[in-house]
Length: 270
Image (cartoon, rainbow, N blue to C red; front, side, top):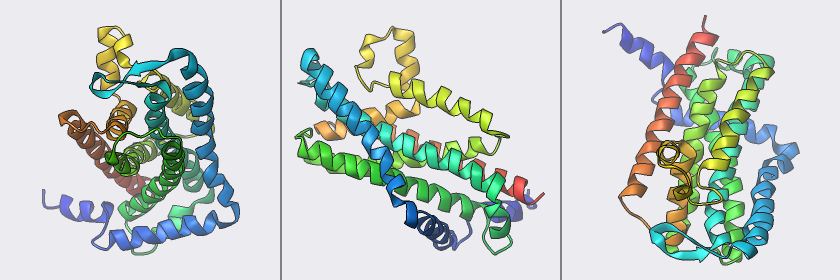
């Protein structure tokens, strides 16, 4: 048991991990400095969905049952879910495709781990950057929905921090899963996961429309946690379910961070 202590100290973020993680974030900021428009590309997809489906189809749908059973405009129902989806997509893109490229082609982390940085510092920094990228999407989209009058409570200001927590959970697990990928063909699995999550997590209609078995399954998925949490905050509904959503996402993120730290140690120090 005692021999495992040094191993954990080598793998997990060091006592100065937060400072060293900032160096990883700074590296990404410099890398994107000349292509900063790429960072805002993820903002337009949810905006187009909101305008086409939220307002377009919403004009035919009318009001729909929201948190607490209150009737709300369809656009107001869809907007918080699209904010959550944008956060998921930003985190997954950064923690899978970009991380895979740096790990297997650029070989960035081989040289970094020759420094005092631990694999956990690298993982924390890369996940932190994925969260920042997702935050830019969420913040930009949040400004739009506020301007369109699609908020009903001061609690809506917590929607962006909630989106950041959601992106942390997806970035950590996405990065962990990427360490097992061996080629670009494996990324078909990423779409196989994220697309159903986007379509079936209560994004465009209440999950009460599902059969009971499917409804229970959806409530266990990570994007649903974020959608329901952010929708509740935008509507001013904060209850025990909101706290359970928070706990779910925190545990998911920390578990992913632990796994990717161990996997990086195994891959880069062998």
